Structures are given as C-alpha cells and as structure tokens.
Length: 125
Image (tube, rainbow, N blue to C red; front, top):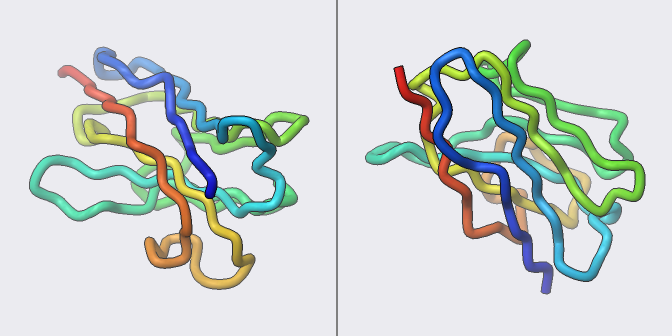
C-alpha cells in the first residue's frame, strides 16, 4: 500500500504561483508513473499533468500547458507541480496519484492505483 501525501496548497492571488509536492511516506516513487488531478466543486476530477517513472516523459492538460510544470526530484522521493500564472479557474482540490502500470492514458483516472487526500488551491481574482 502506498500512502501519498500532498502539500503546498493555499490561497494565492491571480497571477501568482504555488508549488505542490507529493511524497509517499517511507518509500521512493521511482516505481510509479505519477499524475496530478484536480476537482472543483460540482465538477468531475480532471487530469492536470503526469510524469513517467523515468521522468523522461511529461504530459499536460491543455488548460495548464505553459503555466504548470511537473517534475521529480533527483532521488524520486517527491513529485512536484510548479504552478505559475494562476487564475481563479485553477481553484480546486489537487490530488496526487500513482500508477503501477506503465500502460494506459495518463489522463485516465482508472490508470492510477493510489491517491492522496488532496490539497486545496484557491486563487482569488
């Protein structure tokens, strides 16, 4: 069982930045493809970004492309999401997810085996 813990959420003004981190207590994340998803009130959970277990491949939702960057640290202990130029439409609970399989679309919620509890990101206008 992998327990994922997100951190770094908070309140920020439009145009500002936040950096989210996801760690698995007591273990490396190098075995997993990792993804970030978000869910706004009344909406379905949606894909934000993903990174392969090697770190060589990244994918982004069109809505965040050019503003968000997903990365792994050198020890592959944490996966980070740098969010720049935030706008109120980015307000949501952000979830980190880990997938054991290297197959399947990174955007697909069903690909992922483990999920964090989420961290709230609120962007004020």
